Length: 218
Image (cartoon, rainbow, N blue to C red):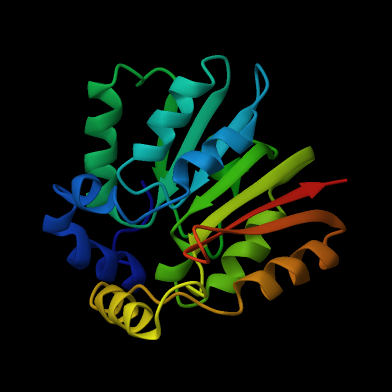
């Protein structure tokens, strides 16, 4: 499952060693836009779908149920989160349809992890704001798309439609969990799209609470 001695892996394991047991229950009300991302995947039959930073596998399980004829893969740097993910996948009866592995989102290769030459769909749900070199995640993910593939992203926006005090309170709370939303996300998505000749669709949801984007290979 990879090298759990990596510093980033150790850091994530410390954060989620206990949180993983309540993660889904406590995050459902503020990780908004995840289901909209899954709906936008529109994975055709036989498609390969990869989640970058799969965490507890909540999204992978939802996507596998939404697209019963697609093939699903996910990876995360945290070994303890992957333990929870594997248990959740088994409990959902999807062990035969979802494969997971340990990997670094800033530098991953689908061929070495899953034997894939590329993915028809990749998605990143609220993981970028947890990874300091998050720009590298976008760069690496964009190179893993199969011809005609797409990269789907949802993460925190800049809360333009909310009072300043509400934004400050949310960001302060998120920082306690090493989550740091970036105002540069839309610009970086456009940069990656231009550098890789991808079509980009970027929108804000819930008065700026979330950014939802799709980068498609032309």
